[in-house]
Image 1 (cartoon, rainbow, N blue to C red):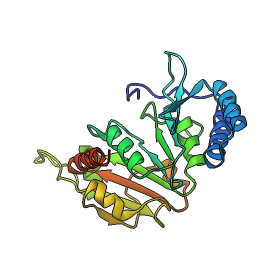
Image 2: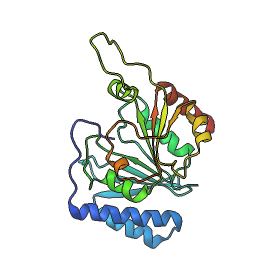
Image 3: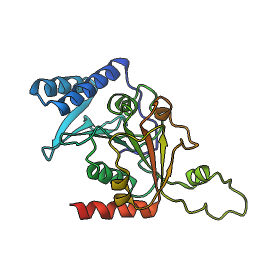
Length: 238
């Protein structure tokens, strides 16, 4: 992960096309593995400056090639997934430990895919993070977010005043657009992160991926206690 200091470099149309085609190949590969599909995906990704790494003989990890990376992100396919859920982390630096907790959640839910942008600044509709969402997150997305002071005030509906010393302490919350993602088990989620409020509405925050999703899109906001609980739960599962 590369941070917030600069926006991700824009991708060329050909690179976007190759990346999208490779993701489609790998989604088919997860369902029905074949060497032909994997090699086709490798070739397509090479044209988009990506490589495939096999980890623990269970995960396929897509990372940019070379030392001069453009902030396009890291993407993971779970070859032993029990569902089609995409776990995404739009802003991994929003809270301490958020990225690690999101990876733990991806593993504990045995989700099919994980998406982490290389830069938190907007990539645009043809950036890899958004393209990956489009292909791998068909109405089955869980975005994981942490709290910043500004985000806490926005979700609580409160405004900052001169007398404010700190924003109100937030509770963990799950916001759902229309219906739950099919791969998300609420009881299992509570076991992992502890108690949270369930809101059948969209949070008052701009989100381009939510805007283009009709249903099956959820956003999980974790407070520090929820992040610690998730880390501890993941350790117990191992």
